Length: 459
Ligand code: SF4
Image (cartoon, rainbow, N blue to C red; front, side, top):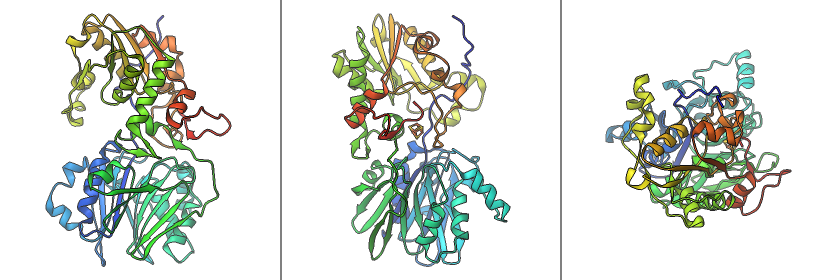
């Protein structure tokens, strides 16, 4: 069977959303934010920024590139004076990768300055932006987060909190926000709770951040997840929790467990690594195969493969070795080098693969371009059979909530059935975990089609 299939693309993954980290009441606020952002680097690598407040003035540093490359000097950290600071790692989901789009975005209002760090995407941002431009608002960036800044500026309410509620009541979509004024830090999770946001404590200082791995790096204690629709206001007088929005059913992004979150994070009460192992175990029960070794596609396939191996009692082996020192800039300059992308990152481990029937486990298939190259590599290294097992259901739709996904026509599972996909990727067999078993592995119960516990719209 011959099918048209573009194998030239290297953009073959769901890309992470952004990471946010704010700390309130610590003498070394900016340094802690830089560390927190470093732990959240997997959520966005395009740019990073920190805004601090020293009791009189706000200070900001924003740059394109990685946290470690931009917040590595004592001078920069010292220039971000103050006890409050908020930071952001950006993956460019909307808006170009331009310095003016790098968050936290900052605005000077009648009540003082306000810095906003936003993880998520607004589904009505374009409509609101147009309405705001029509009434004379001047936008500095192409980021939809700036819509929130303008809505706060236009609100007729007097307090920061009331202006924020006013603004948020007009926006739709996914947002976990950390907002910092000259006297408070505010954390907000959208009513559906699509993106994560957790609270931590370091001595007397309070932290709001995207994942618990960022609390670990600064030695902070995990307090709790911010609830969907909750607004948490942190001031020197204490913490207030409010639920100003109409209650809606929760829709936490199930892809956080599949791929986005770091495995050592605890998300909505579940350790991500253990959850991925459970998905692998359910996958082994649902799609068993006679084989000699279980091999993960590193790194994201590792926990699922471990779960598959334990359940199937087939030995787990690192049959593909990942080179951790491949920089993005090295991959990107020319078509020729880009074509080598997969080989630069991964190599088949011949000693493990030669003469073996291999179960290859990955977290997901998006376009399928990387999978095809990896399978060819495993065969070149001597595997006699390759059976691919995927620790998520077929990805048939782009993300509705703004995660950077290929358009539907580029998603392999949107165009082909499993048998056709197996042929295109070049495997002896291919199977995905079912949606209901993924729910069992994550939540301990099957999926209720009338009221699913999670957002699973891309499956
Ligand atoms: S559509 Fe998929 S990636 Fe997007 S929020 Fe829902 S589960 Fe997550």
